[in-house]
Length: 484
Image: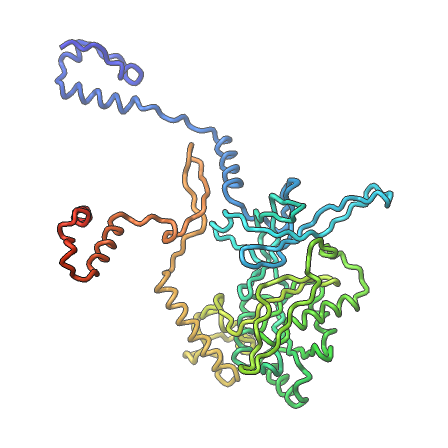
């Protein structure tokens, strides 16, 4: 049979004579045709390396918000600014940004422009939520799409943090002030230990202060001072009513971001109000605090104060959200909601011992001798140099047991592996594209077989009714046939 043409071989193989093809069987000719068709598939040209590098950089910076270093100065448009998150409530953030103030004509100076603080009500960009990059009070952020008239904007990116605490959620913290009261409510040693362990686990310098000094006698004061010194702390006694110890507190809080933590009712908000008014009245230095003045802000109003409950003896929750409050002498105070049970989520079985100054002192005094086992939990193991003759040993044992149960539950529930919040996939021309990793249970579509099975299970739970002929129902039969 004559063969009219073989254009498939024209570009991929050398010319084949018709006489050669006449001697081939039909199966061999069909095999050659299939082979030629597979070779004729057009191949993509190799991409330019420079183009790949430029495209990868563009994708990395445009698809997802990259992490900004603390000293980085990104280029900003007129509708963008860099600010600090001052408060977080519900889905909104109050951000204080710097804005150039127009020079006044009456001053007669050409270069008299100054920076003023402007408070903006902001929401968080959706991509930050999808990649689980949480925005906390105290974060340095980039705000975009700013409406300077309505004072609104959107948080587009977050700078890298120098420190972070979870209870309460505050970023870039320099100092922790653990505040308790001597009376109303009275100190509970175990609760105080939980707060101290939580503060020690952050690695941030802390100060222990005891308020309401005027409610106890001298004997109780000396007893608690000696007791806390045996724990490894030098307590600072103060009183909002008598202003005792406020000079020392003002010295510790100056020129740094401090967070006051403690249970409800110990006087955190009252102490903040007194310290801020005290510093404004006594500070003679003119600080470069660009929070003063702040347009559209209520930061210089006093914090709401509640009373201690007469029934339970505990404080009432008056502070509902975390807020960062500026001090006129420099530095900031974070007022936080009171809570009586710190989570200790960052404390592990191995790190708990380092949160107790007593254990740290015993380990240091015994150097160069160490425990026989590197993973020693200091519970009387053979060769352990930590003894049990100290007051808070029972608290340490109780907290260790609690953390052990929590870690075992997390291991059974979540396992040891955890997927990242960002995944990368290869796109056109071999370019890696970053995209947020969605939560499977929230976004992944359920299989049709599982949906049909759930319908059958619901039908099986129905009571037997003669009027319902489910076996002959065409929909039920179709679902059963599909699952088989």
